[in-house]
Length: 292
View 1 (cartoon, rainbow, N blue to C red):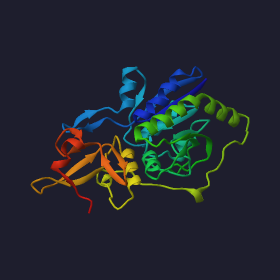
View 2 (view 1 turned 30 degrees about the vertical axis):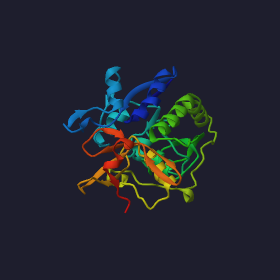
View 3 (view 1 turned 60 degrees about the vertical axis):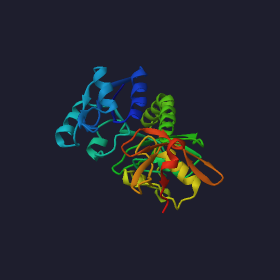
View 4 (view 1 turned 30 degrees about the horizontal axis):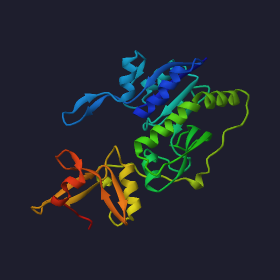
C-alpha cells in the first residue's frame, strides 16, 4: 500500500485525483489545494474544483496559504510515501518537503519537458502550431519543472484544439497510464534501477502566463496564428480586439471562435463588452474591427 498526498487546484487535477481513488494499492492521506477565494462580480468566496470535490466526498483537505513551518510540520506528520502534484503552482516545494516522502514528489505536466515549462503550456503549444506533444511525469526538485523525467507519453495536437480539449486529452492520457507509470517508478526506486532521465536544460523553453491584457490579438501576425491564438485562449482569458461602432466609439470585443477563408480571418462567435455572446454575422454591419 502506497500512502500518498495529492496536490492540485484545477478541474484538470480532478481527472488524476479521481483515478488515484480508483487504484486499490493507493491510500490517499490528504488533499492539498489553494484556499477558497473571492470570485466573480459579487466577489463571493468560492472553492476551487478540487476543494469542492474533497468536501463533497468527505476527504481530508488542507488549504495552506503558503508552505510555512506549521504546514510543513503537518505534512511530515502525515508520513506520506509519495506525493503527486497536478496543476498546483506556487508555492514551490523546498528540499525538506521533497525529502519527506520515501518516493519523493511526482509532478504531471502537459508538455514534452524541458520544452514548455511554466503555468500555461497548453495554450502556447497551440499558438506556436505544435502538432505533437507529450504529457510528462517527472520528479520534482527545488526548481520549477526542472527535475528528472520518469515517463513521457506522446499525443497529437489536433487542428481544432482548444485549451480545454488539450488539457482534457493530456490529463485523461496521464490518468489512464497513472497506475502503470507510478508502480514502475516505485519498483525502480526500490530496486535501485536508475530509470530517471535528467532533463536537457539547454533545450528548455518557457512562455509567460496569460493575463486579460496579453489576450489582445496582434493583427500583425499571420492569419493562421491568430486563429490558433483564439482557440488557445478559450475558455480563458478569451482573445479580444477593439472594434468601432456606428457612433465611432472604440469598444472591446472578445472573439470566442473564428475560421479562416481566402487568407482572411472570419470571427464566428463574439461578445461585445457588456453584451451577450452572439454570432459575428448578426452584428458585423454595426461594428468595424480595428486592426491597427
